[in-house]
Image (cartoon, rainbow, N blue to C red; front, side, top):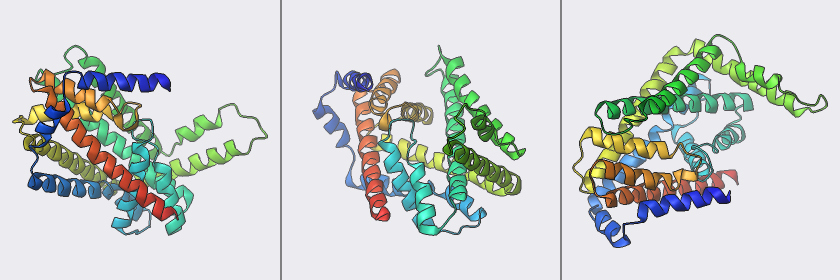
Length: 317
């Protein structure tokens, strides 16, 4: 744990080594009140879009829960996951808890909806990153020396996730099968319960994939809409900061931001700041904009996460 925080400190030092707070303040002062309101409204719309895929999955499973209620649960989940070490995981059990406690959704069905939503989210994330990095490499901006490794990793994740979905669609339950062959003591009851839960959840996801192909296609459309909105918000924020960037440059910068959140650091701490500075320098921009953009993202996401934790605390009472 100590080594992790030392690494975070080194990343922060590298990002801020030649930059003063006055420079960052001067850059952020380019954001007028109108631009902040526009970004706030756009980000609010994006937060609402995040719950759309989960909402249609639950409706297809027979649970018509109000959209804004699910958006509130999703925000609470984000708040917990944001401050949890790891690539944006940790808040999903809270979503399951809220569904089961407040809406009497069975634990297996709640797990099915959250797991399928997360599976499709990961698939869309790696698809976006793969396409974005191929475009960035094609334009000769980054990753020239490590194109095979980077694109190979993202493509491999896409194949793995798609393969898992296809196996479930075929009626197989691979995780339950693997878990059932792990060496546990016979007297332990919890492993059998966990295996049965995995079996039920994977079976439900497989049935869903076979019986709800239109919902899956709509989920893909909503995932694409989310990424278009995220890209638009990011490009607009860069413009408001005074950076005249091309769409490809904006795409390259956002790739580094998204890769930071895949690191095993809470909220991509340090990785976001260092990645943004590196991207700005490599594209020929002042690294001050990298620190400024990362600070803007950090404050925005932290406030959203804290709001989510507050909402989650109220609902748990």
